[in-house]
Length: 406
Image 1 (cartoon, one colour):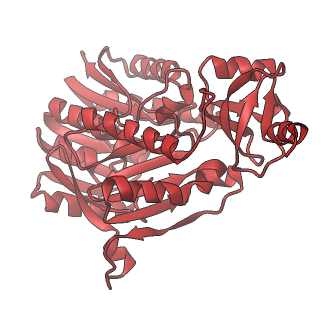
Image 2 (tube, one colour):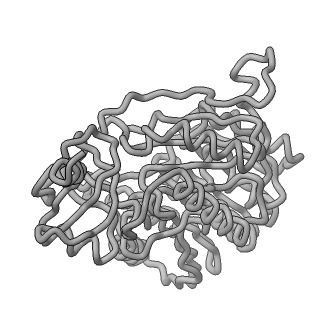
Image 3 (cartoon, rainbow, N blue to C red):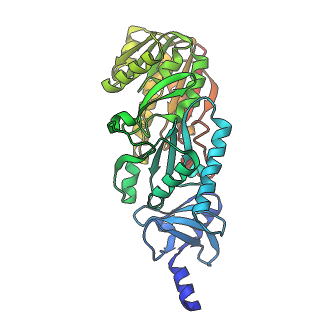
């Protein structure tokens, strides 16, 4: 191949970006939007491309996704080869960090996408099983490589893909779940294989890797649930309980806990988890949390410890206003239900409702409830879900521990 042909080939694998996009990348963000791509690479979507500014200066290597508004996701800012050893090193770096911060569970996040400088890749560990999500074209192309690396490094019993996240549709990727690896072939049906027991903070929980929320369970609240256990006392109330994770933690310190969720199947799963742990001081109720909080308020019910862990009320920017009304309503009611000296552990997993907005909403709720409130703790997602400082999208879970003074 002649020199001109080599140059032409290199240029075909290069994406040039605007000054705005280059500045954003050099400031530490990993996303380059389609509007900032001034010269598209002549490669298939999902390929690794070299990224330069308009003057031809190197910016980084990125996964290219033609279907997405986020056309380029940076994977390295070093001008070095991206190969299997590169990806292995990233995986081992992520695993090393979990070795430092995870010691109270056998279920945790091993790889947290952008938070671990691996955009589009989620890997969760459940005991000797792994669940993988490849949420971008680039990572989906590498899916089987990640399976091979997990087998080589961890010798898992199972590897499951949970590629049913709606964000894949924005990448033009299909929705699918299934088994990618089974160390020992069994004759058991798939539902039996992917149903297992995990431990967290001394408690046991049953999870289903193909049917549970996210990849089987809400792993990002693990450290916040441990904190809730420390504050729990008196009469407890767990709202949006799901599989009872917070309720079981509260039961360690409360003489009685009421757990609310609108879904009958998840309430049944929560009851099973309580039985699994020999816990009998929780009452599980199928109910609309908004309605039940209003009823409790009208009836003059009072609690000493309340947890609010609702689903994301704002899936996009357009839903923020309605979400803030929802957050204010449940927090206002919860504050009215608290006894003096009581504790409210309140959460928002809506990225579009940032910390400042959430705090303003809590302040408005306290004012309208006529309560004086202290902030005792400000918490985020568990440390196995790291926040990349210059990628604010990686900070999504806000958790405040509030104390009602009077």
